[in-house]
Length: 144
Ligand SMILES: Nc1ncnc2c1ncn2[C@@H]1O[C@H](COP(=O)(O)OP(=O)(O)O)[C@@H](O)[C@H]1O
Ligand SMILES: [Mg+2]
View 1 (cartoon, rainbow, N blue to C red):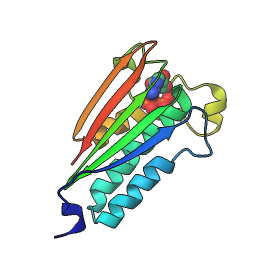
View 2: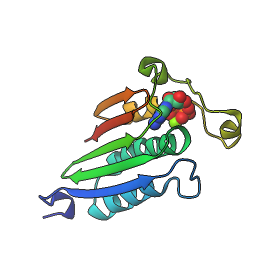
View 3: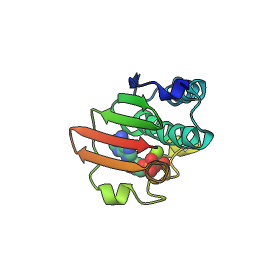
């Protein structure tokens, strides 16, 4: 039995801090490393890595902090992202390619192209985003 075929889901959890560019990218790179170890196909690993990296950067840049959970099952990875605010007032607008509220100093760092959410959706087999202003944002992505 290949390692990726293990029956029990493997869960990885990460706390992501607002503004912590030092640690940004750690969660996505650890998840990617584990999937490589488990022998998942390259195309699936690439989609998980992009989607998780974009989610992670959004927590660092736009949120007050949050968590990322990866649930790894045979042929399927579920990424759940939760944060504690500020929430997104207009989800349709936020999902549009090129829309960004990133301030100038963030753009100078090379972020804020407004492609994160559209990329996450494109990389996902199932994508769901819910947001409540003043409460927070939840994203669930299934990549299979
Ligand atoms: N976790 C979040 N909390 C609050 N706002 C968010 C969050 N994620 C995304 N947004 C909003 O959605 C916009 C679009 O996000 P995205 O497509 O990743 O582009 P970018 O990060 O380059 O601005 C952001 O500029 C921000 O206004
Ligand atoms: Mg982004």
